[in-house]
Structures are given as structure tokens and as C-alpha cells.
Picture (tube, rainbow, N blue to C red):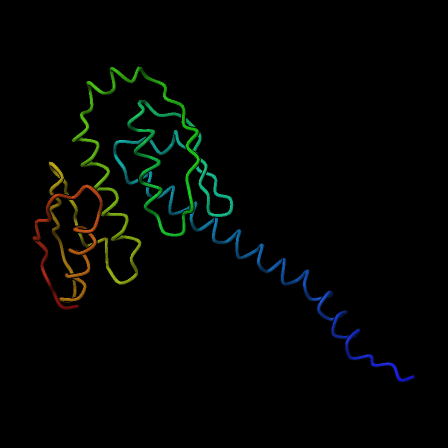
Length: 184
């Protein structure tokens, strides 16, 4: 009887290599979670209606968990909505604690003001995160859900992309284009 060693050798080779494949996948998952966490913290920091220092983010398997404290239910919802717009985020577990009386906070901050702030932050974050746009040269101002874009872009294509991003952002009623196309 002749014994074939090819199959046992292949099986042993696969079994020995699979822990390294598993380790590589875990490393990639952790790197993606760290990248999402950085984007989440940046997004919260750019929003002037939230105190990013009072909000903690933790990312595991592309799910963001929010802990910490905010002043109102609207701020709690705003933090979650902002993070749900980020690419590669599967979901947000919002465990933020509301510290102030929601009725007082609602009187101090109107829904329109918070909606404008959310729109402003989402548009600016999208522009900063897009590798095809120099988002640092673009100013975004939102009033009554009308986004005004000003600053410099470096091509017609970049101009159209910036305007499209603003137009395609939730809750935007209109986009006023005051961008200037300049050459490098």
C-alpha cells in the first residue's frame, strides 16, 4: 500500500498558517476601529454645540459607544446623528447622560439652531475627510438650513464635488455657492 503525504502536509500547513491569518485580521479590525474612533472624536470636536471633552467614544467592530454627559436630549441625539454619518460606522450605542433639565435646554436652544449646527458640522467634516478636496480652504456657514460655501477650490471638478456634498447632506434646504476657483 502506497501512502500519499501530500494531503496531510497541506492540512498541517494550513493549520499552522491560520493563526497568523487570524492575527492579521484582528490587527486590521483594530486599525479600522482606531481610525473610526479618531474620525468620531474629530467630528464631535468640530461641533460648537457639544463639549467633546465631556463625551467619550469607544469603537469595537465598527460600532461606536458614547459615554459621558451632555446638557440636553437634543445634544445627546445630535452626537449620535453626527457619528452615524461617518463612513464605515455600523451603529452607535448612545449611553450619554443628560445632566440639565431638558425643558430649560429646549428654551435656550431652538431646534433650528441645533439643526444648523448639525448641518454645518456634517458638511465641514465631509469636506475635511474627502481626500479629493482641500477642506481647510473652504468655509461653511449654515443659517435656517441654507448652507453658504465660501473659500477656494482648485478645479471645476473640486467645485462641483464640494457643492454636491453640501446639497446631499440631510436637512439642507439650499446651498449658496460663493466659492472661488483658483489655480495652484
